[in-house]
Length: 107
Length: 153
Image (cartoon, rainbow over all chains, first blue to last red; front, side):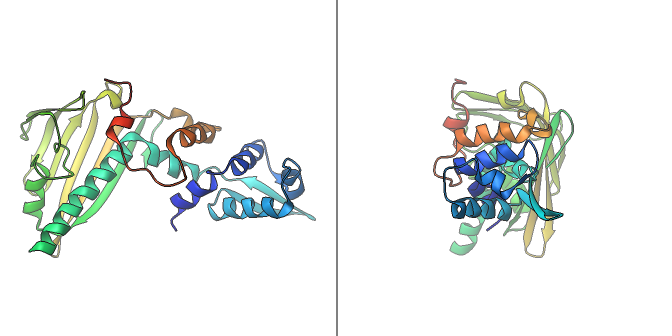
C-alpha cells in the first residue's frame, strides 16, 4: 500500500485519532498512552503499529524508557489529496488517459 | 506539492498512449472525456494567446485567459472560479514525446491555501476535521462535483 492509504487508514479510527491528539502535546511512554483508554494493551499496540506504518509516530529510546512521538508531516499527504483541485485534476487526467487507452485497445 | 505562505501548487503527470500532436489536440477538444472543457453546460473557448475561456458546470462559472499556446508543446492559461476565492491561478500543461507515448504534465499554481492551518503547528487537527467530513468507511472517494460545490448554487 502507498503511504497515503496508510495515513487514511491510520486516522480512520477514533482511538488512533485520540492517540494523535494526545501525542500532539508531546512524546509519551506506551503506558501513558494506554492509560488513556479502556481497551486492552494489545489493542493499543495494534493502533500504534498502524500509526507507525503510516509514518505518523516514531519510537525513541531515552535511557530505559521508549518514548513515542508524533510525526505529523504525513498528514499533509492526506490534506493535499482533499484539496478540491488535487482531486479535480487527478480525476480528469485519469479519465483522459483512460480515453486513450481504450482507443488504443480498440485499434 | 510545494506551498508558499499564501498559495499552493499542484503537479500531475500522466503518460498518454498516443503521439504528442494527437494528445495536444485532444486536450482542447470538449468532446474528449477528462478534458477541462468536457461536460460543460456552456462553453466559450478560444485557445490562442490572450484568448478567453468560460465554462459553466452545474451553476459554477470558471474563467480564464490563455497566456501561452505552443502547438504540441505547451498550454498555459489563468484560472478563476469560486474555488480560487476570486484569485487568478495559473494552469500550465506541457506535452513531451516519450517513444510512442506522451508525457503530459499539468501544474496548477497560485491556488489560495484554503487549509491555511495545515502549515502551522496544529494544522493536522484541521485535517482531521476534514477527514471526518469527507470519508465514510475509510475508502477513497471519487471527486464528486455536486458534493464539492454544495451550497454554491
